[in-house]
Length: 96
Image 1 (spheres, rainbow, N blue to C red):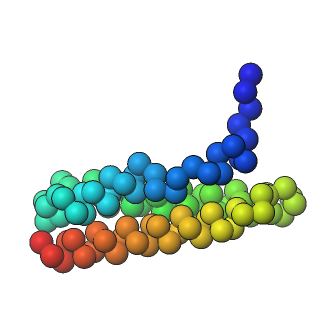
Image 2: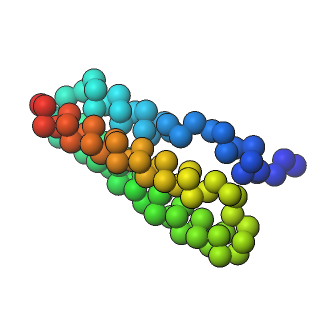
Image 3: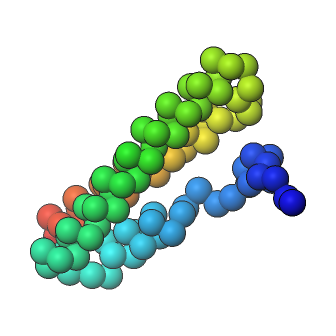
């Protein structure tokens, strides 16, 4: 049985499926459409909750002295990505 390894997955692209889809929606869809906007806002809220939960888990690993060295940088990169997405959505909504 293969065990999950942080080191094996650390190189995964930060631009996850939610980030790619929200970015594409902001670029290509009518953000004035209430259904589209509701979907995008739902994804952004979910991503924000995931980031909060990951930060809590990372903190527990840090306190235990078992966190990977770059976990804080990874969390910060996720936070920056989410802020960029939120900005892109705001700009797209304002443009419509």
